[in-house]
Image 1: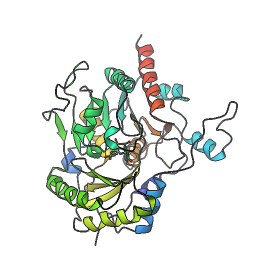
Image 2: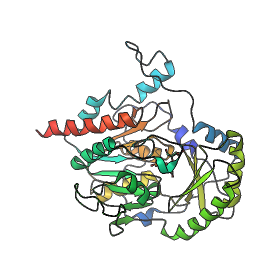
Image 3: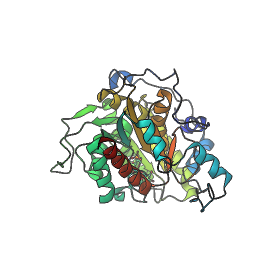
Image 4: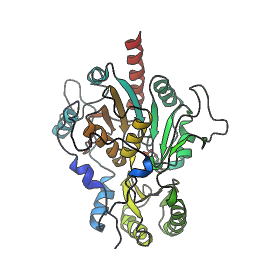
Length: 366
Ligand SMILES: O=P(O)(O)OC[C@H]1O[C@H](O[C@H]2O[C@H](CO)[C@@H](O)[C@H](O)[C@H]2O)[C@H](O)[C@@H](O)[C@@H]1O
């Protein structure tokens, strides 16, 4: 039986009213990472249901936009907006509360790339980061340990960010490397060094991913606008530029290829189907690994801040919430079910937030 199922239920299940700081739960409290390989166990995801996948693909493009509040009106007069903003206040508007919770603690910053540091665009190869955003990330990295956690291939996201002093967790956390130089040094060839690779829990899947990439790339040619991106340990099948009437056909095509690869699973991001190894590893596990790597895992005086916009970032938000640690910040203009505590509307607000973090740290140490 083919083992594919959308991961939307986990996100929907997170739709509760949360206070800040988030409550500690016993469930995931102690989960220190011994080694990435040890935690990469196989999981069974059950059977796929075509209808629910199509619903999920449609839900990856919400139409109900969060309005900027009108002067004197809490949320622009929209009760849904007001309710959502109450549960996920702006990390800028409530910056003082967030800074107060972090006061005296070691901050560590984890940043998703697409939709967080760069705006979503039609062509994935053109999702560049502005110099202003790079300056903001550089400033944060000079103060706090900072990581990029992306679904992209590690070298590709490094090519966009080009800051050697960061940690990079590519392929949804399945390819982690540490900083390669001090804050003023950029890699000469625009590529990252392999000498600082810390964790690759899906290495044995590389030949299979290559093979499936070839099969999928050839097949999706039949669907105008569809495109397969090779992210090394996972694949992205993009449908942003595909006519909605063809989404079902595209999904069936992907499923027809994956039925012969039960060791792979399918998840979903923003107008993208993600083909990944069926190992129990995601951005949440990558966050745990990095906290361990930084020797922060067992410290109560650590305040991780994770900023992301996508369903795949929910795994990291859930880790923070389960541990009662730090703050998850969802980047979204739309009310979404999320385990994050705070929100920001778009990458421009992310940039302002990063600047504020640096300014606040400067005041605290002056
Ligand atoms: O974890 P992330 O860094 O957010 O990466 C997730 C996926 O991001 C990219 O796709 C998304 O952004 C594209 C460019 O704006 C957009 O065209 C696409 O529709 C989005 O899904 C990237 O291309 C994927 O490989 C990543 O998995």
